[in-house]
Length: 87
Image (cartoon, rainbow, N blue to C red; front, top):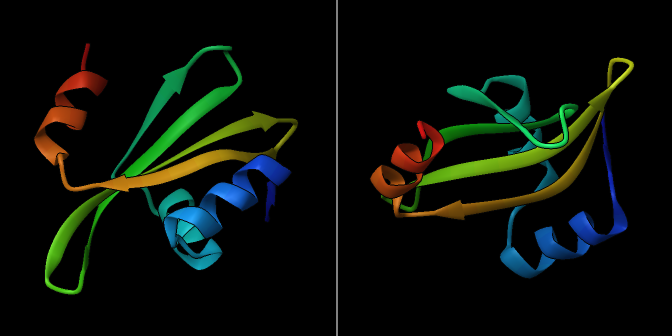
């Protein structure tokens, strides 16, 4: 089960991203990156929507088996974002 910071819920609404989409990314990511602070993770995967490919990224805290979403966004700049994640 995922929990959401209030800020994250507002961002999802503003960005037109559903909680179902977020849950799919976290449950079945193409890749999970470590982030700072050490308990922070970035789950990402490519999803096709309306004939376009998007990279979805979900940033969350992971403590004691609990995951709390900080933010989520999608972008069409897939190559650029994937390259940045490898640095």
